[in-house]
Amino acid sequence: MKRVDFHMHTTHSDGSYTPAELMRYCKQKKLECVSVTDHDTMSSFEEAEREAKQLGIELVPGVEISAQFDPGTLHILGFFLDRHHPRLKAMFEEIQKARRERNPMIIKKLNDLGIDISMEEVIEAACGSKTGKVSDKQIGRPHFAKVLIKKKAVKNHEDAFNKYLAKGRPAYVDKRRVSSQEALTLIREAGGIASVAHPKQMKLNPEALEKEIGKLAQEGLEAIEVYNSCQNPRDNDIFNRIAERFKLVKTGGSDFHGTNKPDVDLAYLGENVHLGYEMVDALRERIAQRR
Image (tube, rainbow, N blue to C red; front, side, top):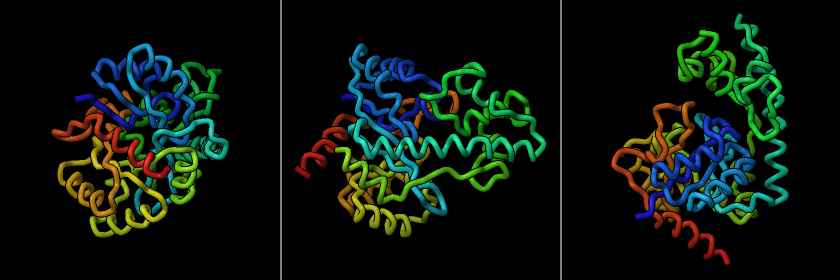
């Protein structure tokens, strides 16, 4: 059985592995088909693709887009995308600009809380030097967490988010998010297929979640991440039933971030879960049915 993992991150968003390092780790974990799904960017694809070709790994162009949603979070994965699609690229550029404007606001909130932290320190945490190249990297909350850990303001990554950086905490600043309709439409326009990432993080009870997924299916959703490292077997059963009700392709991914999420290993999709290439075939078939 060909092993797959369709949810992972690099240093181009909030992962700790470079794209090439991640592909080498995929080879080590005996993965044969993967999708790198950095947040709101596909800038890692070129480097990842070069390494993947040398290693004999099939790499599917992917992304994870943050959409507007309450009470939890709604992230939408896109697979088999044309990364040069002009409207998709324009959306990424707009979101990245908003992220850059957000970071000084987080610095100010932390300073106001009595924590001595500067943007230069956060850039150094992301790039390895205070003058590091940031054009291909997202400076985000995991990099703030690294600085907070270094300064001993928090114990670890989880503590940094729980105390300061998570939604609802004192140093949190919301980021630019698109509507679910906009994300789904652009993924389809770029030739891709959309899957809801880690539906557990939408923080809805089963009935409310089913209703919300039904709405998203009407907007163009065609898949759901039934299997994710943050979900347990009971969750998987719920998401399986929802997938079958709305005829959605069932996807899975570890949501690997390297050392930024040390408890989540690459290729781990949940307890006793092993996805094969049939998932990739199902995604391709669904795209082909549109033609």
